[in-house]
Length: 244
Figure 1 (cartoon, rainbow, N blue to C red):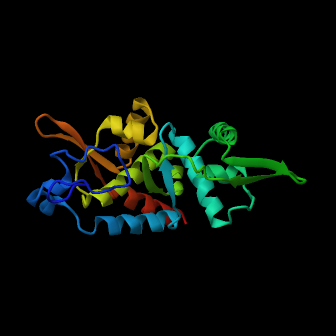
Figure 2: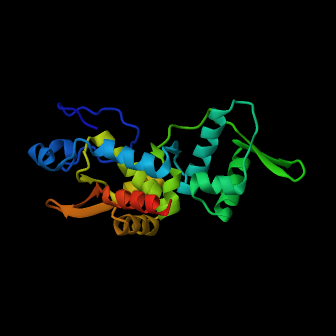
Figure 3: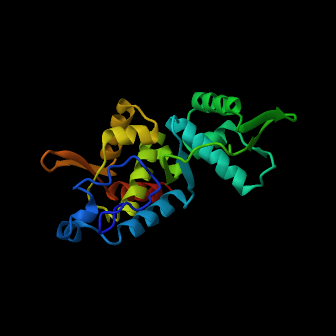
């Protein structure tokens, strides 16, 4: 973010273009007219109703793909909720529920984190159960981005669109966009979330299809801008209520 005299203000991400003339805080009357002061409050209400308020912070480090970031972040969150030297049990079904990942992705990421040395994994007992312990590596650099992730949303739209939605929702709050359009570079989305351009395009299309995201090209030269929509969340809440 940038303050009124053009000085950089620390933010939990580093790859966004904070000097863009299309930054929502620079729009003045346009933002006052089209922004929604209660947007974030409504967003939290819908997510709490739909997903029972269950979220955890996701940290993406340089070189991570999104699956690795989700798995590692949930392992870290689970370890912090127990104690530093305690092993905890989890099934593959639980990992899938808390990350949105498929079995093959869980196997791949688990093995890579074991080889990295931050995850301890063993199976014991009869019938055998899986036990984990996660250890934060002290020499790790600061994460590229950090945002709250609602894993239950992946059950409706998939984990890539869910992560993109959660990240943009956090940026909306950081930018004080109030549910209005703001600019994001496609390259920044790819690098920040550890996704390919094809994966980003598919995630965007899924969000637009579910009425959770709107895009436009604006300005000269034109740049791509994003705006979150709550209509899709409201529809998902209504569908959930009808099925209960």
